[in-house]
Amino acid sequence: MISRRISSALAGAASLALVLAPMTAFAQRAPVEAEHGMVSSVHALASEAGVEILKKGGNAVDAGVATGLALAVVFPYAGNLGGGGFMMIHLADGRNVAIDYRETAPATASRDMYVGPDGNVIKPGPGSSTLGWSASGIPGSVAGFALAQQKYGSGKVTWADVCEPARRLAAEGHIVTPGTAKSLRETKKFSQFPESKRIFHAGGTFLSPGELWRQPDLAATLTRIQKSGPREFYEGETARLIADAMAKNGGNITLADLKGYQAVERTPLRGSYRGYEIVTMPPPSSGGIALLQMFGMLSPYDVAKLGYGSAAKYHLFTEVMRRAFRDRAEFLGDPDFVNVPTAGLLDPAYITGLMKNFDPKKATPSDRLAPGNPAGWKPITQNLSPLARGNVAESTETTHYSIVDAAGNAVSNTYTLNGAYGSGVTIPGTGILMNNEMDDFTSKVGVKNMFGLLQGPANAIAPGKRPLSSMTPTFVLKDGALFLATGSPGGPTIISTVMEIISNVIDHGMTAVQAVDAPRYHHQWQPDALVHNRFSMSPDTAAILTSMGHNLKEGENLIAGDGETILIDPKTKLRHGASDLRKPDAKSVGY
Ligand code: GLY
Image (cartoon, rainbow, N blue to C red; front, side, top):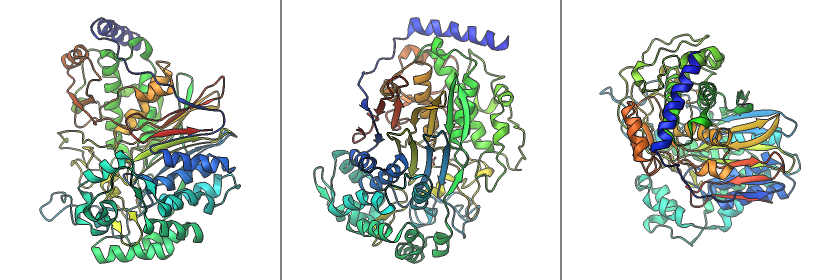
């Protein structure tokens, strides 16, 4: 009864919006179609590296490793050996697997390590969680790729085979694209780190578009890892170079930290939305829980009927995001360290309760949400007040790629250095750029991190702990068969982007490219702001939303993301690659 009343009120708002707002229009382009395999990534050369391995007989997992390693060479912005991430694997026999290769905090890490003597969080620079030697967690990418390939690779190509495209790109060089040249030139991070300046700013002369860029140190590192195996990174010459440089420069990562690092396999989260199954990343990602909560909250409403781009739909989606992001801040952290009440948070009755005070005509201020109390939650006695104010930080860091092979195995992989070019530090002699993932922990309760995210005590720093992430590599299945592989970069906006891409396909019947190209918007509870891309919302719609009490913020890059997506046409089984127009070098390559 209640939900029928809400539905009809929403439908009323929708018809008003349909009268006032023009249909949001965007260009139609064709997907890249392929019969056998497809790799969609942020850089054409990395997609080609994956396809090279598929053509050699490797499966999606083998290709996923090759693509990830190649991105460390051609996309230093986020591709990495010095970071970490999550790989979701869907196997053609129906199994789904989550590989967690998130960075961990070093053994000397402690809860208040980034709080200065004045009680404030240390500003970017020495001792900070954002810039320089102390900002890095122990990298997980090499271990994660190795675990994925050893356990779920085809067995037809070797570790050395999947390292080869990346090694070749580093040793023989690749042509710098205008996008890479511009991005490298514009980053200010390298100026105080001589090794980074030498490599990524060509000693101050900068790389030019069209130039052949060789990275001999990175090639040597890749050769060591290729020849001696992935543990070389953690126990061999590479580990020694990392630990020595850290010790010399006030960093925290030791040889013992590196030796102790383990990627782990976790059980994916599963949920459903309008007859489709959603398979997604569990904690320490917050993305999967938030995604399933949001779809749970949307389920009672006829989103298609509300109309794409209507004020009623923006309102509903905003309220759903607001509630999921509140729970993210309050309840989520590394499940190996804190009690994460996953089942309670995904209980349908709890999700229905989250929307109890949803008003179809009015925004719910973020500080007026009904307190959440999921079953299984043991409160941590530290409140999230005072509430953070200010802006959602602009950021398009991190990178995602999706892969489907001829047999129907698939990979959805999101990995990161955290901020663009991570901590700005390159380990001398290795070509390895390091992450600044420690900033994804709660540096101080009630203080925003670099994404403007308010974080809770569940995500406090502890040795060996993984920081809470928003990375949301996801599969959508229909009747047990893979339908969609998707994900995105964008810090907290990742979760909204993934939700919107999937909803665009399921609710609005969009093609993969329409779903990826569509404008994006985001609300993360705190700050209480609905952010949307410039030019994406009509003034009429904006006026309706403002009158409902929403605080609108528009920006060019606020919710850029990069939704590298593959859809499998259920009838033809053709793979539709949808790379994101927002990234100049992104490309889906199929065969
Ligand atoms: N480093 C961004 C995230 O993991 O959410």
